[in-house]
Length: 412
Image 1 (cartoon, rainbow, N blue to C red):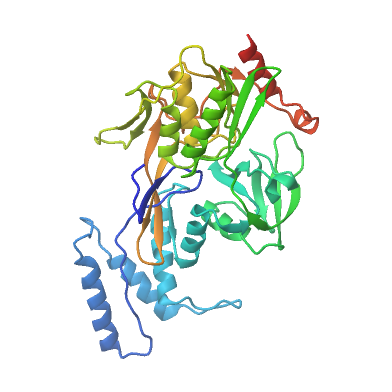
Image 2 (cartoon, rainbow, N blue to C red):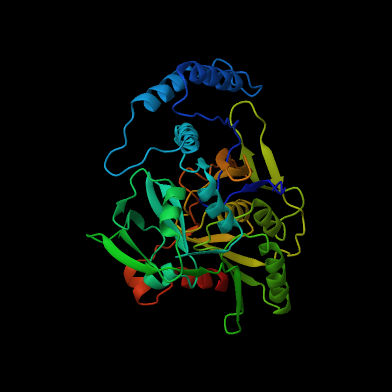
């Protein structure tokens, strides 16, 4: 990942931004028609004369609609006329939404503040990672020990309503703003769950969200060491290195890497982790920009500390997304690990976060991820070598058939 204070490439479900030219202007009602015309002409010349102006773009229609609304519009039903600034934000949001990509969104000040607090891992809410799947707001995972997990939210749940507000056409960011809130307050979800006839109404009390990172376990009876990774944060590579040290010290050669419910995070973290198992130069992921732009290929750093005696299983499910899919796909296609579980989420797009002004930002999809063999992760996700789907009955009974299969594969 190419890091800077203002420009961070992210691949976590829901983190996407684009840089555009932003114009600003003032409009004061009650001025004389001549002064108003002069003002608008100056604004138009400034906008259309900018060096960043796209070729063959005529803003005359925009200004005509702007002036017509300004002249004709009357607020009704208890609404108020938005400020000029809010109207500009709305115009930019409409332009960005026209891309038709749920991960490309404009952030006005309040939304930008919420988004950045999530990146920093400091926020109050319910602990749900979400994405858009089949044009529907879908749960990727409920974070470990979060209010959402305790309330029974599951990966794959389709969020139909939030506090009685329909989510049809709702962006991830708009959903986040509705879900976020002060600790102790309640938010209600209506969700569709596969296998259920009726919508499930689930009330969740908001709390401070602590992002988990990694857990380890060594079972002496099976001689299997398990690393459970919950996200790909900036701290993940160091914690993963420490977990591998514990694995080596256990003298085991059987490793389970559990990426179930892991929604992703930083690309560099996935590349660093894959490098512990792959020789230098091996392709980990391809970044395809489309058109005539060349691919960017991320390759193994070549730590490669394990020999052929290593037996490794990666557990995945519908909550495994983006960076999880990159790591799992690389280890699978290079023959270093066997994938067990259910099909992954299929979130294989690249997003960039860029500050536009001090208090606004944009997020945009700039590329898509391909596995080493060229498979687009967005096209249906990854299919495990051993497909094991869990039923609600399995979960209720505490039967982890996916883990059981992983143990079976490593015990052969």
